[in-house]
Image (cartoon, rainbow, N blue to C red; front, top):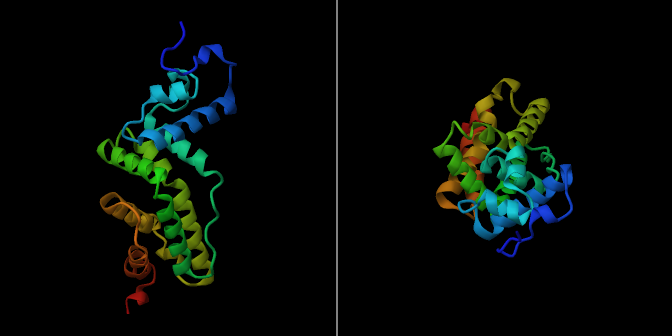
Length: 204
């Protein structure tokens, strides 16, 4: 029986597998995010847009949140390298400014939905929450390790919780105030919070 919603029946088209099908699903997810936002995102509509079945989505991504994280990575393309200006302050600011710009537009709408969902259901979304910050924390760790190698900070100052602190404060501001994030907020996070923790003399 032919579909009545104007979308092609996935059973009548050429069968796609592997990376080709995954790319179609991720592209459809990004298109749906752009059209309806995260709150109204539905796996059924994504499947219809990608001309596949919901089972194909759930086989690869057991939850909407996991699918959205994968789609955002897909849409971003290769990650930019960690900033390397020769200055710890400028490296961190560059990374935070890059993240703040990405929070504007459809990416920010999706990120807000994901962050809220992980806060309201932390057990179910623990894996997604961890995956959201892996790349960002890796870049921050590179920045801090490089600063330690230059002698700007002590290697012992690089604590696990400190690595994600500055980006987490940007996320908090975004959740409360939205975008655009003023540059003064970013410089305040670096100058008033992060650097004094990494370089105690910076308080003086």
